[in-house]
Amino acid sequence: MNRIQRIVAWAAAALLLFAPGVRAGAEPTAEKIMERGRVKEITWKDENGNITAGPEGYATVRYDYAYQKTTETYYDAEGFPYETAGGYYGRIVSTDSFLVITEYIGINGKPVNTKMGYAKVERRSFMFGLERFTIFYDETGRTVIVPSLGYAQVETLATGKTMMGRIFKDEKGEKIDTPAGFAAMLKKMNRDHLVIREWYEHADGSAATGPDGWSRCEILRDPNNKGRITAIEYYDEAGNLTDAGGYAREEYTYAKGGLAVASRFDKAGNRISFGGNAVSVSRKIKEDLLLEEMFLDEAGEPTSLPEGYAGIKYAYNDKGRLTLTQYVDANGEKTTCSMGYSAVRQTWNIDGQLQTRNYLDENGQAASNAAGVSEEWFDYGEDGRILRTRRYDAAGNAAD
Image (cartoon, rainbow, N blue to C red):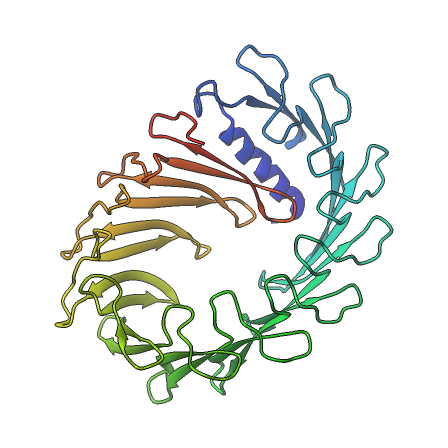
């Protein structure tokens, strides 16, 4: 699917999102104009049919298509050019094989620095879809460090189809420490092309601490049994075992049916409870996807956690993205957890971003979490970060 098709698909999703009846009186309705099978214009209207501001502030977005290029511009309810919250009036998306370039334009149609800190972002992907390079530019065409990210470029390393690391760089292409505290996350494979180590580095190559509290993890595998993981150990920057992430070592044993049983230990070697009487967890894994977890007591029998469930079952879409999380009791039957719901259903947009999250009861009907939220919709900015989360209760009323 090329970028133009992706934009059209997104527009179709937007129409579904703002269709009448989805949120009675809470959201405007999106109306589209088609031309040669493509969306030419989308205009938002209120319940009386009057043009009004849409979810991003503008009332109309117009699309112009050229070879491998789509230009979209924004207008207010009076038909005048509209400046978005990001500081731009439109954008141009160009595609070329595995390259996607997004340029933000001002009222004159020329590149403009947005409030995100850049005017253009270039994304190049591997043939199998993983993003390879992301580079940010200012309105003069020079690479620029994005303030909110702390880097100008990010390079993804891969061996085959396995992601082997990410390196964050400055305007000159040199490593740079990001606000997260590291410049690179790297992996190492063994001769069988299985990952056996992950670690974080500073720009000077010294050890850094990652977001989970450890600097390096060693993945121990059984060379005589398909390289199955037998243990994972976590270390700090000094090379000492650390349980800053909650535990220092996770050990695995295996049973028939693809079941792996994991137990966790602190750096002193003491077993760590998963909660209640649960001292281990069995995991059913197929094609690298976690399908089921059951929490076990000392006797190896399913036991409930304090949160009210003994296990979790997972379902995925054809892209491998999580679509359903179902809580179950010790007998494997659906149960309601202490948060007030039995399952969580998720949908994903055309760009692989989480679009909706619904909380369900044991019958698959709308339920609510502890905050009274039954449904969540996520809107994203051009940098891929969540711009807004819209929350509704089980009756469809805004719950923000």
